[in-house]
Image 1 (spheres, rainbow, N blue to C red):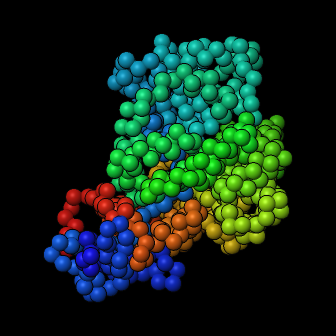
Image 2: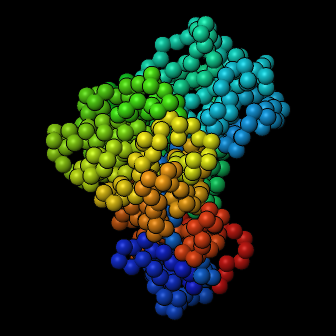
Image 3: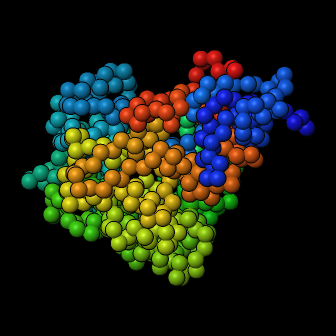
Length: 536
């Protein structure tokens, strides 16, 4: 076998994410592995006439971003919907929905994704935009939707209502008529199940489109947060055809109706361990979100004392199901926005350790938007990973964000407590929660560096740049049991990396969100490259 490299990237500001040796100048790649990390002078011993030599031009080269909280397939399926993330008012909403309707004249439904709270509040506002075709639009967090009268009527819930399950609510007016606001899946699903879904060919097309965009953002791996065997097979089919360029860790979604017998599917998914696609985890939702009054809290909502969500699982139900999952050797992810949800989940983890015995389980709590100080040390004590998303936190109180009002200033000091959690000894994995927030990691880095205190007495929860990068690389790899394979630029590790357009450590914090990838490599293959002449 030739001793020469296929690709060399030299004269870069290499951030290796290796704890004992975090910086270098050059990297050499052969096949799908890194074969050299060191100086620009020494790397040339790996070069021959067939080696591609890429100049780093003193820009940051780092491990590919590992997004620790993602919704890949469901997110890609929405790429054909009206994109409402930037809508600021009803006029902009009208223009986008009417334009989308005009472009998609044959579509039975008008669907939109990503709208912020307070833009629309009832079905009449949507009726004024389009009344003769059903409309369903969803909030950026996926926990609230709004439908026009046509859609509610077709779903049979305009006048007759429906009994909803845990945390669900069909909001009604004083006469008992649905207003159009639907909170949580049990309320949303009667409408959503009528919205036509893409067929298998279209689904595959949208998935490939989404993966190309994700690679272009420098993301090389994701931890998915919903799934089943069918989803895993969909991803694996792309790998089998040589079209997959993103590593995907796929969980089995646990629902309140899931039985012990149904966990056999999760165990079967655990046996699938491809180069790109693998199973081995389960995902629970302990609560909803603050914005829709469905987060499970230790104290009442600041702006609505009557909102008292009970959580999706009782303590007994969660502990019983989590113990069964842990006994199968599965890793557990749990969505927790409220401090009550965080505590109930940690209590469950403590209980299952007593029942099953302690092992290297690396169970996780996702989001942790608010935490009680007494629960901070429990992450380290129980070996639980904190998985958090910087873009979820409002940068300042100048943002018109209902989250701040729902929680109230009395909770702000323990909200999105990245620094407190890190200082308590927890391992912190970072991600986006796409489609809830942008999958572009540079925007997440910007948020984690630039978040302001919401009141002078609040602790500074910002992280250092190096801590953030580790959260997107080395610790994210640890959070999926892959710390000996990826997340670091290290000899023998997988050649997953990204070359950025600037030296991050020389870029002012306020400008870091404008940095972009120039090249993304996955498994030794360049999957995105900006055509600006990178040859050395």
